[in-house]
Amino acid sequence: MATTTDTNNYKFNHSMIRVKDPKASIKFYEFLGMSVVKHLQFPDAKFDLYFLSYDGPTALSHGNSTFDRQGVIELTHNYGTEDDPHTTRSTAATRSPTTASGTMKHIAFALDPDGYWVEIISRRRGSKGAEDPEEQGKGTDVGTYRMNHTMIRVKDAEKSLKFYQDVLGMKLFRTVEQSAAKFNLYFLGYPGSKGVPEDGFTADYEGLLELTWNYGTEKDENLSTMMGTRSRRALDIFVSISVDSLDAACSRFETLDANWKKRLTDGRMKNVAFLLDPDGYWVEIVQNERFSGQENF
Image (tube, rainbow, N blue to C red):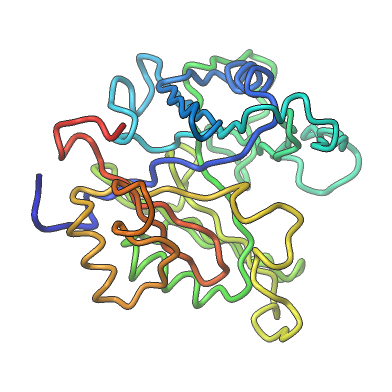
């Protein structure tokens, strides 16, 4: 295993969401073309983990080990929640690109069984990211799909961009300014061999992080961090970065005075660490198995 670390080797490996009924959730994400690439069971702690990814022949991470991928979704299921009447689900409707309400006609949103929003965008280039009208209605091939990005809402864009770029080594792929609506979008990721897109077209990538910033929130003293204001609990969602050397990466974070939620030496699990971003989102740090030559679990 490497004794040094290089952020060029890092990957935005997965996004974790907590689910009520894994059978229903897996069925939904399989409908979107994803596959379960790893299932970890922890009966003593009464929870299971399901890692889903696009894994067809043309998928960007096809055949890679679980933690040597980008764009993975981790479903965490605590035993018994599927039968818990107090665990509710969202009942909001989906929106199609042609729905009369709403002005953004080139995206759609579906809801998974737990009410998490899944944004649907086109990988085809067109005006303002829209699908070419000549291509509409020609069918779809789930084998070409990507788990493109995960969105988190941030209070102070400058602080968040500094954290994800300077501490985690991500690159800024694209900035979308919506001044009329008073918000900006920032897309970050690890470019790997593809490099950062020169034209800002990011729909063909996987494993990007979208930061959504509403103007003025950084000056709102009454607005707490994400974990103190959102309805979901702190552990209902987090993002995970895989690194070339877990020990060396954590040592590097120490030199940068990163804010820790869990160091490697804390708790029972000695093979994962957690940082806190400026809004209190948990960032898991795990070993990329390609560099260690062995499975993490």
